[in-house]
Length: 368
Image 1 (cartoon, rainbow, N blue to C red):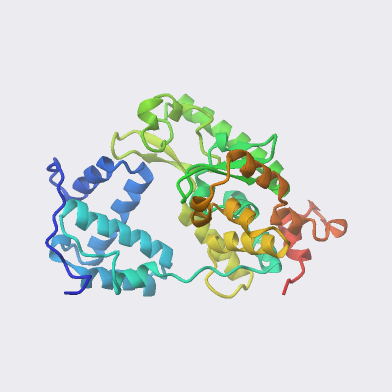
Image 2 (cartoon, rainbow, N blue to C red):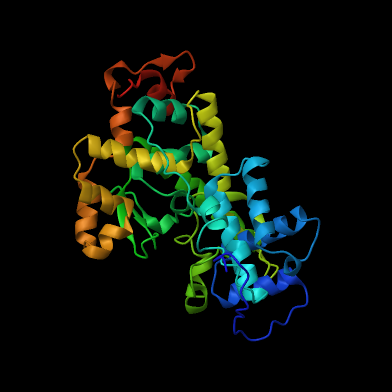
């Protein structure tokens, strides 16, 4: 039997209380301790899968339907492999934890190979990074600059909290990265003023939310139960808060989420097309460019690995916090080098100083 065949395995959970499928899915997600964002994302993809099928119940579908749905996302909706992986995880959770069926969606070939084995993002040339960032502005432009300037993953970038930014030392603490631990990266000098302004505006929004009685932000793991007031504190508020409020499905309370990865990714793709950069460019390409440009400038591979939060090297010999801070403070961000490439020649427009990112696009030279 194929590894993608439906097995008779049934998960052993307490009976669900809800009658509706999506409510049952939410029950299982909360029991697993997932965040509110993960819960909403899982429900979104399962709902999309059901609508795609013509409102068929998932128990009446199987591996072939999942494969067709993922193909449709890629071919008709132009959805990236990374997004298809998220859809795959959500559907796999539904079948495994709610319907008690193991479709083997993460094993073998077929569905897993199509959705999970995505090609690694290519690094951009310095001139391409400058052109791309020069066409971005607002919160997505600042987040994209931070992704390149500090090597942050898209999820790490948009979910930064005010407490994570150390303006005095120009350091950023990335909490619970993919390797399972915290790490420290540099805050690029080129966007230090912009980050200060972004925190000021976030603080103003936090004060308005408190005045309106908006519920606190989402907290990781069980911190909200351990520290009930932390979710309403300024320290835990987002650096990139969403412009609209979101209803918490568990409590029906209004909460403030952060800028979404999809918004960031969409803005980067649009800027890449406008800049004439070939290929599918994502936020991960900026992170890949951060690593390659540091290595090209002579930074040793272990330091770059520590800044990236590469779990494979950190598990072998995890550096202590002091070493991480030293590495982050000692290494110059590639964003700063990009901005300073032709610093003496920076020009002024008729309206005043040209935006720093536009200067990068105008003045950066190709690197071969």
